[in-house]
Length: 218
Image (tube, rainbow, N blue to C red; front, side, top):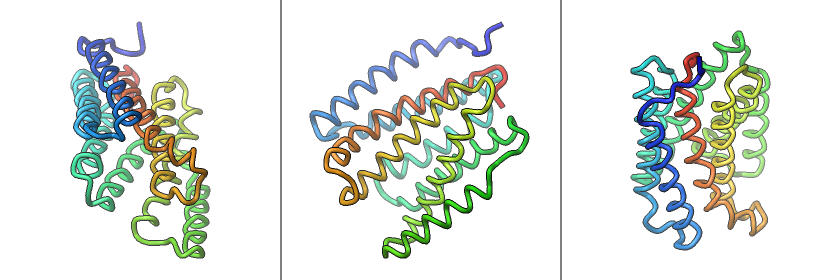
């Protein structure tokens, strides 16, 4: 029996997401992102809807909750483009849910000393550079835990969609960091970051939504 449920809406979901992704990448590349905001939000909303649909039919309820929280965060960060601190707080909740999934599968290993040490180290570096503020501090804690989640996910048996989805999501957030601090990076990398964000983000969310359809999803 197949591990993943090929639910009725999945082929249509993938087709619509493919069209949205191509349009978003075109607008980001050729139009500076003009007109892409609503398309981005619709793409994430469809991922949350598929995860909820799957949860109602025996899929992963945790994945549905994580994608619903992702949609809430993107309501602030993508659709409204304000209250960034609140948006990052919600994304911390998303990574907390993903850590819960990882810990259930791997026997409770969370690498908390690594997470704590890296977070404190980067926070100390930002403070020394005079770059530490509430949003930057929270973003560091979020990104360190996200990176650890992505790394740990690759050791989970039978969770390749989840792992790849997290990794693409992480690549998006790396691009966000570069985009917000362009002076710290080469111009070519900074220029790529604007397109790279959604080049990685929507495919990552699609894979995470699909991973929630697993018969063994937790």
